[in-house]
Length: 419
Image: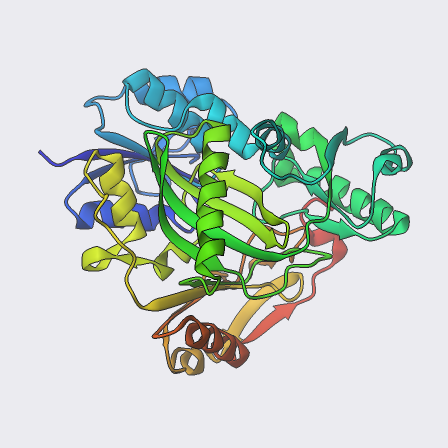
């Protein structure tokens, strides 16, 4: 009998179809559960079960009642993780505990757990969305970073260097949290804003897998672009990391402590941190794999993809022997240069022809309304590179990006989401 894995994901997520296709390719039987419209009969043609991310208990009850029982469960993206945790507990399947998932998704709760565990943290506090910013700024040291507590992907994260910058950032985040798509999430944490002391330093990411509370590092990524604000749009990830071995060991050690502090036990994690001369500061540990199509930058023993590795782990197979390939690799999440209506792109073939580039995938659709960071939450696409050395992979990504010419037409203010 093929192994069955229940995959929870957003209907429109970049990764959703990749996981489903990978499961079928390796002989598994995937059962999809997505936030598809529950009033229509299979609108996406994937026979997915309909769940509501804002109703995790009810959704988990539906999933737990399905037969036959799955061999494993996997969540793709932040929002499905809560339903996955509750469903796994009801079915007796290994997965991160419910409380740990909630803490990992809430920037304030995560900071509290890290502080209690003795991990280095910046000064931080949260305030309600409806507070007068003049009252909130009294507790602030500059520079500081303001961030929504429940959003991901650097959306709404803004650095302020002065009181006037603080007021501007606060009102901008407040407007983001009132956008229709955010309010539809029905997440109480989106009624607060967190303010933290700015952490200087280099930013990195760790992709890992936790089994019985122990971390297995799959890759450490450098983020070579300086992420100093005022916004923190991620662009390039490159592995293997060029940090000294002692720094990489410190990153792994702090990530393991952060995993334990949150209570994460079984499943993928994606951690982000800043490193400076005072040590490793954990920014977040998400209870899910790396987002978007970035997983395609990773290959493991026997040519296995990250999706394959995670599916096999979820189904109970031993993946302890998998190692990342020796070749350096990188991905660029193509940033949105301006808000507007996407009309197309030129130069894709030229970008693909650049040495060490192995693919360019444009995910934006013609006619799509685009919002750039910090209001937006998406990218134009992804560029992938492989080379003998990380510096070559990074250079190839930058050259390929320079070949692309995007056409984005300004739109009327009344057309913008949330306007």
